[in-house]
Image (tube, rainbow, N blue to C red; front, top):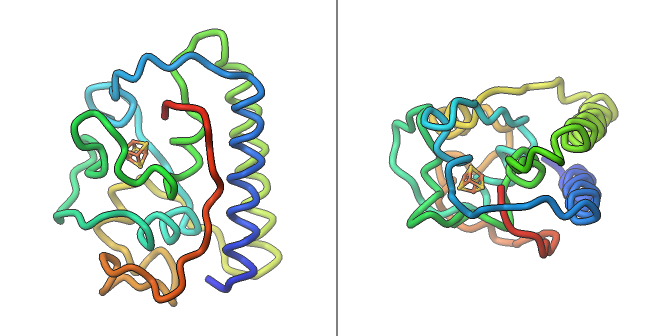
Length: 164
Ligand code: SF4
């Protein structure tokens, strides 16, 4: 992923964060949404999101099961600044579901436009897939050293809402 691509993906995050923040969905901070099997859903992410997550997330043990995210520790997200779009947009607040679908659709469309513009192809898979196969996040991914902080850290959008 080039720096320009990364900036564009982070800009999509910022737009999504602002859109979610404008609604202010309720979060009960149960952490259930990160325990996928228990909650009955799957978190899909793009290779772009996987790359940013892998660059900034703490170390984790492989293999990663589909049951839950290894970055949820003690009920809290330990990869919060680099969390993927689904984590930013998803809230279980019933009154927010329709708007959530719109924000998700817009954000994914923007990511696909970036993929088209840079000719990367579109790779979208469950979180645990990328965590187990980090090289699939991109040819320049620091996969083998995905637990190593990058030499140059890119500022990530600051979010003020809780949840995801
Ligand atoms: S990255 Fe954070 S918010 Fe997303 S599933 Fe993992 S623990 Fe939950």
